[in-house]
Length: 124
Length: 389
Image (cartoon, rainbow over all chains, first blue to last red; front, side):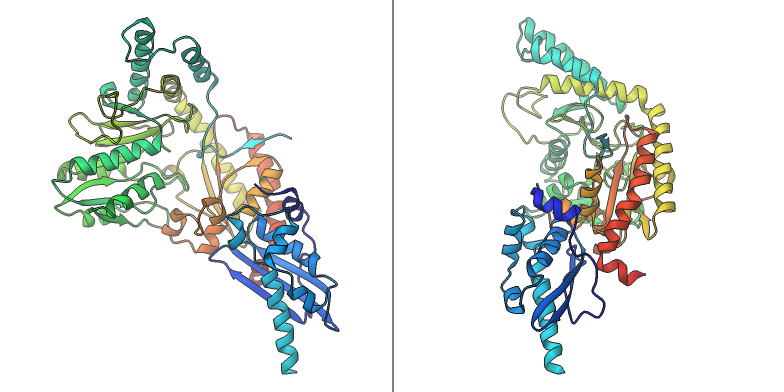
């Protein structure tokens, strides 16, 4: 049911973990629906220097998390905000229909982390 | 890669003896049992032999067995058929929260169509309370359906106790025995069952065959009309190879049950104890000891999600199942685990390993060696695990 790319990202997930002293943290989903994604960002000069993820969820949830970290690493905040959940799914060679809504939240998690960074910046 | 099948509650391989017998009825004795010529007579005899074999395994009379296309159809025939036949006497139906969807969704359909439904809760071990059941009975209760053993957590229900009550009150008692057939001794008489569902493919018979036991004298309405087969209760030309394979599987199950159960219980307990001792933050779902089906292991592994676990196991050749939402085909995790009081989070992380005839001690050792590594890997990825430390 999963594409080879999904299985590859599930088996060898990129950028797993949490960045210590991250200046942008985003978490989406909840345990009730079975998916939680947490993204930590190291942002410098409006550029994503480093990104890591931790995910509780199904194969699609892990693979989209892993894929989105690759897609936004080294990008400007503006570019990263343009990455959509649909684009992540497409980069993985598609997801099963049932997974498109419940487990395809990785870009949302990145956007949440960027907003967290921007909010903190305003307060400072 | 060596494949280890630990999903026998989902389905089983067909026993070679049953498969070989079936081949004859595909290729040689292909007649229609309703025909009066040689071809028809030949297969009719085998059909009745199969009916006898199924009846023998549950201490019924062959005339009380109606073949269907499987457990789901037998459940539907029992519940819809009894509710319709008795609708003049009352409209109240009782079932439990942990039934298979073939039962639960049939009741919910009836509840939308003029019947009233009480769904009984279960305790934390997944067992229906007889006291709650007694309290739920009303003067207009016409049908009670409680499974013999649960497919997910293996909990064995107090069927005989319930049967005593329903018989005394003249309420029809349907038992879904799909998971217990061939694993627990079933006696429809001491259980006081009026209707009892069995399925072939869970006991090393072919898919697409099941049967409903209908106690002599109990009237139910058919779901399917046509050529009046199965004493007008299930029209349609009989699936003769399937039914004959099912009969053989019943005969073999009866012969092997005692010895097989000894093996399954030993392997089950080794697997459960091994998981508990090697992996932290786990919880066995369902009862322990003789209130649990011989081959059933169900464990919640905290901080990880079931589908990820199944994918990881599958990559190593281990086939299992889970109560997570991703594998249930809905957004909610297993209704059984939720009914037992598990949180969504813990229910999503459940793993069912159901053992069968061909599993070896080496299979168990392999799982106990690999599962902790998979759990470690997934927990390292989980944002929930960090918080727990």
